[in-house]
Figure 1 (cartoon, rainbow, N blue to C red):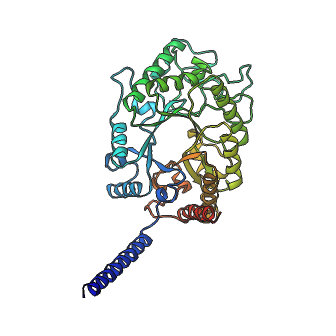
Figure 2 (figure 1 turned 135 degrees about the vertical axis):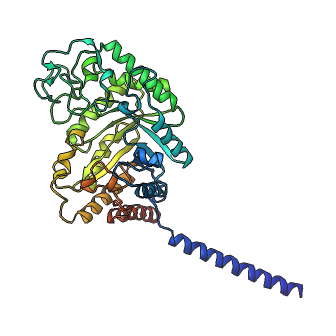
Figure 3 (figure 1 turned 45 degrees about the vertical axis):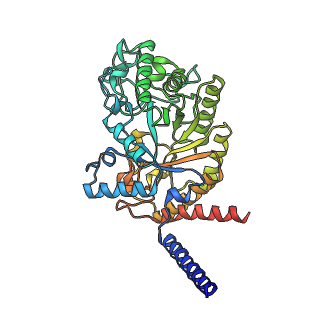
Length: 424
């Protein structure tokens, strides 16, 4: 009798376990696949966020309801964040001196990231744009050809020069300053104090920094570096100094050099020359940040070639500002200078934009997964509505936070890669 009861109890337990397993499988099948889960074996999936999302207040063309939806999508899909603007010099250190910092928005960013188990990146410490005028101001008169009204002639980032690393007036971009200038020593001290203060404040919490942003010249000219006041006042070693100061402030932080247009062979060649030079000087550059502001005509082959050449430097590659422009004007080149953004989203969308966007994203994600050097992929915005290129509809989610065909194409790219790996 006892044996019979034991058998019945065993069968009942077995049936219960089977039903629970079936229920769990059904629930798993019903649960939508997220980006962070789909690529968990490859790289973290991040996004740029704006101040409204971090503070829970309406703004940036979004109502409180829309903003809440943006935050919900952020938490669901992503496991890494970076501020689109709030850690740039102009916003975090708008006024001179130790009392001139505004840490509130970045504090909110870090608190949000840590509370939601998200990695946090800092963007950016040294850039030719969005830097307040006081940083460059001093008592030294500007060089010939520059007036208080601005340069007499337009800046040319590839003008002939005896200095292979560039020379000339402050290049394109907003935030240009043309008054009396600081000395080399003054500007280096300001850079040192800013980096030590900002990086030091978030030591151990912001673990990745874009130390120098967009210092490489566009075009096919011989100059490697963009003309900027950093270059003109300090000299080519401003890049090495910035990395040295950041490493002093947080020896454990991953320090990136970050730039756009690296899918273009000429600019990629300049990047490789710059990084090799820094490596020879033992400068602590720990990763390459490839912004990857691209367009729907960018193919797997183009991305594969770019990643192949960059990973020869022996550094991890972080895709830092990913979006894929669907606007007609955005198909002309791979530039992403902030001053040219308006023209890059003109002309309406390309024909069959959704399908072309999906095809492009599928190809570039296949390339990302193929290259094990890619350790992070960060989108430049959670959805089209908050994108800096909103009219180009460049992201995986529309303004109502609904997935577009491109989202499903990206998920399939991860699934197909997993299946192929298993079959091998």
